[in-house]
Length: 559
Image 1 (cartoon, rainbow, N blue to C red):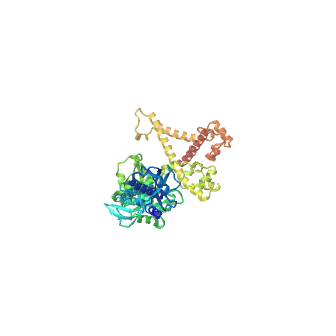
Image 2 (cartoon, rainbow, N blue to C red):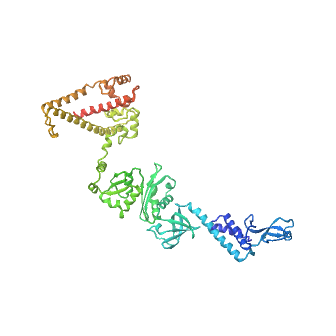
Image 3 (cartoon, rainbow, N blue to C red):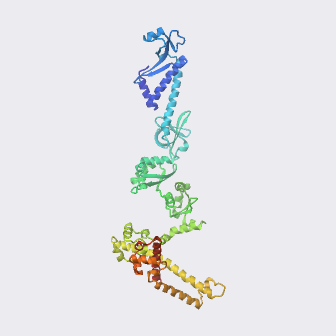
């Protein structure tokens, strides 16, 4: 056969992308098909390729017999001896067949089968190649438009971009270079069909990976992304390193990176925001570029939230035809309603939600009331907390009576730190004192009512008549106050404290605490660390110390 066979095989490999061994198999099938067409069967046909694959030879394998019954499979002895002098009866000879001897019909039939086989192999090869690329970005050139569909040249094959996957902002012209996302690969009767898209959110993600090295290297992660193709995209990002700003990495120096992405998307607006697991913060960020005053969770089970914005930000938060809030709903996965403060006050919502939004504007007073340790105080640096903790001072009650001079005696506490701590503590002590005053007033109000009830007739008095108590009730009220003062003065020994057992007194004495003054001068941490005290006894001492100090501070201020 032709010596240019190897060159032809290499050309087909480069043009069609078909492996060389498959092409050789097709050539073999082609020759066998032509042989079968001429001789009726190909059972004795043998195809052999040269070592360099530059030539291929077709042989007919025939048995040597005396009388030939079938010229296709048998050969006479005399004829065989002419071909090979060493042959004998019963041997088999490979007799070369010249393909040029085949008739035109046999050759055409073989060529048709070979072409069909090549198309099938090419389809399978391309399918296995592109099926692994679903979800990846490819670059091609616009070839033509037919019935609204865009056909894109991908090199080895052709892709199709249906009208539903085309951005409404974009116009496609012949030979335009285009980046598209492979969304589907399917085999059809007409060949391989590769479906491309310019509207999927994954397209934006892949473009960000190309333009932002931090995203490609997994330093910055795209957590969520939503898109209204051609109009706006919102993307929530987070950083796996504290020293990398995820939003700044995506924007780039002077906005170079984000501008390149916007140009690729033909001017589509892109909002980049920092992801936060707190739904309130995430909703607030998702409504950008609008400024959100506060976010109220109306129903956590149904994931309903209310965003309150200034009057001049309402239209911006909602967006044109509700686009901005609609994308924010999908990004945060919450049903978000946007209102101004005036609109919110007119709404008929649950009292709990009303209290929630009131708390947002009123401050964090309830949080301050729950603070018990120095480390929880706002504004206190970690070094100050560590130094105090190393010196056995961890709770607020340990430092409420200390002055700036007392604090500066502690190694590591400077005068500035001491003044800052005293200022913060003054605010905390003030909150505790307000609670104590309220408790004292409650005690003075309840007990006179009981005395007045005993001295009056069976009918109970109204609340507005209680202040008009009898002389007897006034005397009882004064006596009660005197008894409380006397009880406070009487507590001079540790054993007189409520809840202190003799066993606790002995263990405190063994630890060097023999009187009440020594007990007060020690910090809570130093006291509970005395050897021998059980956890229950430690809790009793801690509770009594806290209540005792508060009572003393409350009485001094009331006086």
